Amino acid sequence: MAIRALHLTIVPHALAVAAAVMVLVWCIYFRGGLAWASSNKNLIFNLHPVLMLIGFIIVGGEAIMSYKSLPLSKDVKKLIHLVLHAIALILGIIGIYTAFKYHNESSIVNLYSLHSWLGIGIIVLYGIQWIYGFLVFFYPGGSAGLRSESLPWHVLLGLFVYILAVGNAALGCLEKLTFLENSGLAKYGAEAFLVNFTAVVTILYGAFVVFTVFTKAPPEDDHSYSAI
Image 1 (cartoon, rainbow, N blue to C red):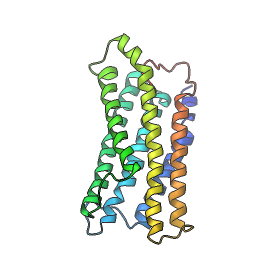
Image 2: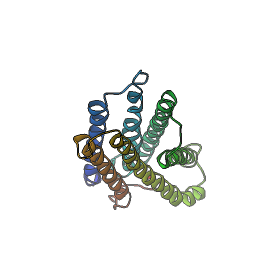
Image 3: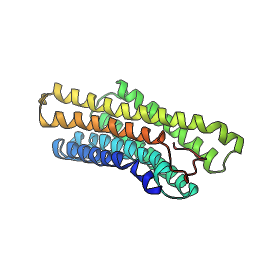
Image 4: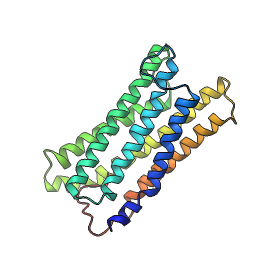
């Protein structure tokens, strides 16, 4: 039964690896590399898609799937779930900071696009979701009644925020690719195709992550906490 639970995540794990490889190839091979500080400010920006996709979307997705698929006790899965979401949140915050850093050092205004507005809203909601989950379901822990009443809303908000994050990641790929094409990048070149396929794979990964939440779990799994 535990093996069957792990089978639920084989496809999304493969998609996660593919998405991570593609965003690294894009930012390192096509865009020149990654840097926290550089005279070439584009290298600073390159940290943004890498941290947001690998750190926020993929690790966040793994956090969601961990509670469904890992053949461990409920308490251990709860801890892994919590820690992975914390890592995703921290890397997401750093990823957003790198975008601001790039804009500030390049004399570009901040928060001028739908992608940036959604990004700020998503990271705030993600943080609220994590804090509430920590306090109610982990420590100090709410009453049984509060946990029972909170659970469906916790799941719903978690899915809503994650779906928004995946959609906004695709929107970010579109925005950046549009800027690059307006600056002369070939619309049917290798880089353009890579960026588009990265967005497509990211969406597929997100879809499979959400799918695992609604897939019937093995009988021995205890889901008194949450899949989110």
